[in-house]
Length: 278
Image (cartoon, rainbow, N blue to C red; front, side, top):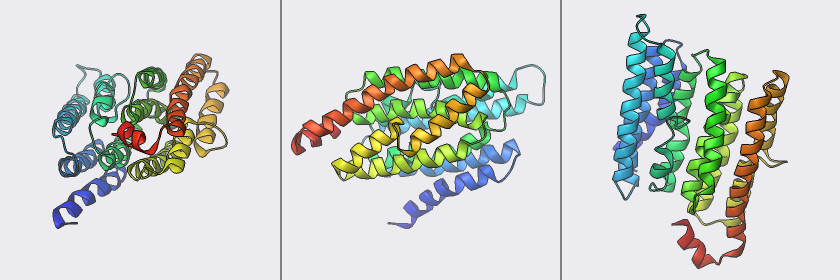
């Protein structure tokens, strides 16, 4: 590894520490941007095609600008700060309604790049998002994000696209975990599974890959099942039956496409599996 690569990787890894070290929105915003400025060169180095990297850069730049404008307008009374802020955050994190870029970008990035985009760089933005107290809006957006990810996953014919749709859904689950106070527990579980998934897919390790996909779906007795059950518990405790019902339907739909890819792994030969993954 050359020194520039290590420097960019350090920027990505130090970003969450900067963003989470302060409750001041300016410091949190700077933490997010440090991560992005480190990630973009890494993506350029690791990705064969530059088009998805440029698309990701433009989306992230626009979302950062919206968040900054929202912060400036916080000191006036001419605009609803939280609406503009959440719109920017939805684009940055890839949840509804700013999820439109996720699948098209993830489909065309390398496994390492996908792991970085869907993993570490989300920590600081979620910490920033937790500064906003708007439970009703978060309940609506999380439900729509989980449902949108489930529906979009049905149309995916390759595993990168499926993991992109899964990311949209899991972002919604993370918002619910954030509302009920266990965001970091959910995020640690998700990122551990995600890391093992990408490593195993990169090495064509069938058994590990299939187990990771089933674990990510939330089937018992895996850890993600426990995290999702905790969300369901809090929803039922707070009588959020509409959200509860949407999540049940979305989970069943998502389980279908997770099992579909698990089934493909079980049947196709080693050569066809190589073509399928790429």
